[in-house]
Image (tube, rainbow, N blue to C red; front, side, top):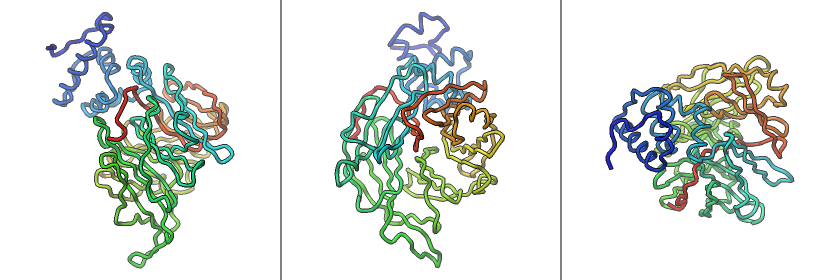
Length: 392
């Protein structure tokens, strides 16, 4: 089957032509991606094309041009894409009740269906997730030895994986997709040795073991070198933030710990003032913003600030005011703690038995009621309904 260079028009009959149109869209997108060229099309046609692309193609399209990248993170695009491709976007929130975890899905788009983790055996706690909708969960409530699972909630697929060295207490876990098709992923687990404090070059450090599970080999391996953190400095409690191929945690001294999935190594880097100050903001949280590493900062009063790392290699940050007034959020029941970024123009904040989607471009908000009073962890979720091989 052959297609012309621009096999699209604004005709509504073309967009309703089903499978043939989708095949043409993917053929044309892949051709542009290979050439790294952005088309000279009217914005409305460009929007129609991308909102019918798969998640995998959208990730690749973001590399073609800045305009493509920016458009795919807008809330209007995410809503249209969810409706036209039957994909799911939202957040899994986690809390606890009587020492057992509670998980609840909050849809990000109006058409997103409800999801649950109740298909997994036993009460489970989410330890990590990927941007592609793959979760790492653990059940350490009904068995003496914890049981680890990977799953895809949208298809209710799950697979038990081998256990790491569970005699060492888990500090944090993270997860990265190495390859989407076929699916290959890595799980990173940091655990605490019995003797955590060590001397290295006459300096006192707190050490961690680092274990990596690779789905392709279906086995864990422990890195030879210990992870060394400054003494009495710890990884933050928030879930890892994936950006630029690395996992990130904000340390308690307001530096950033990064684990690099490709080299299986780690670094610690500073952040600029006032982010580096431990008492300048009431709350700070790492987020992903348009594929980059970002930081939501909540001062005592005034407007919430959004900082974005513009260049990962040189660690250059820029400040972008989110134009969200703290007093306005408090009137909606927000507790002042930053949640995360849903899209380039919508901020998610948590409150008492609720979350608030706040559109800071149009100063509009949407309140979603929750079955939990105070989410302890928020996991961004974006997925399709295609089955995957979790043991690949």
